Image (cartoon, rainbow, N blue to C red; front, side):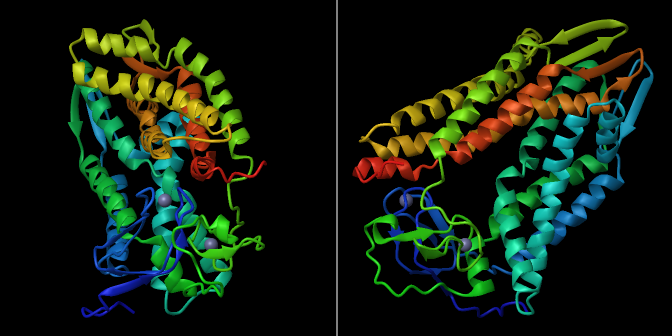
Length: 423
Ligand SMILES: [Zn+2]
Ligand SMILES: [Zn+2]
């Protein structure tokens, strides 16, 4: 079932519409390692992977092994004044459930265990059964799951959260790192390799073949001008009168429906949540009966006063600057695309890409609180409780991520060309 060492060096990538500016990109032959970029906006549309079947399978398998190892050994241990405790990764999540912090436990379980395992599992199943396919609908569902889960995999953000928690912990107690911790580092790196070694468009092409179009295509025009719609899941081109994609059966939209209104509604919700996220304490440290709650900003100031300048800077950037900058830039983009014409579309697209890229990193502080609250429970000596702001701050980050996904960057180019139809 695996490709031979003399696999054909060229892979023919179907004609497609750029996901970010809707420009029609004709079918292109790609050599191994070659990247297909949109000639107008530079968006990376596809990358011809070396050994496109074996590598994701091997990385996926290794990711699963690391996950098992991570849960079989101690993740982290710490002791203070002769009292101490050691915990595996799953025990730390269990401790959050026991203490009644169900929301944090659910966020951790979904982003660190649920989504990654479903992603790796469905990817391995699809690739393994590529020749002897399951029922086509089952293959379509698995393929769609792969595409939808991808933005929500946050193990790398969690890893940075663990490192920050370590620095905070070292100031309070003696910390030991177990084998489980190092396995988690392996799990993170291998999961990132698995994701980057899989070309989703290639996979769809292998599953259901190329999508042929009868009409001749014009390369330097948008898909919409040629009555075509690019599928946002599998990338196949469809004619605009179709409601579902011919290849993956996803709903088709030339532009995301009610993109501006949805984005604005989500942004306003995030702003409302942003207030309690900053006013209430995010974490409450009880040390020898002494209770000291701290807000996000209070935590940054405290770290700065203790001389942990790099950590204070990371938390300040991730938890204060990024959410604020993201909300402001999305509001600004919505304001910009309300008009009839638009200048400098590329700089606006770059701003949009930046907000999409940095958004998930704001979860760092939520992860830090969850790790410390799961780990540090030494009864009367020292216990850390998550504050009410942890829930609202996680809400701000998740809702702004969805808001960024609801915004359709193709509108920027429509307005630039002055071809936008009134919605
Ligand atoms: Zn483009
Ligand atoms: Zn599709």
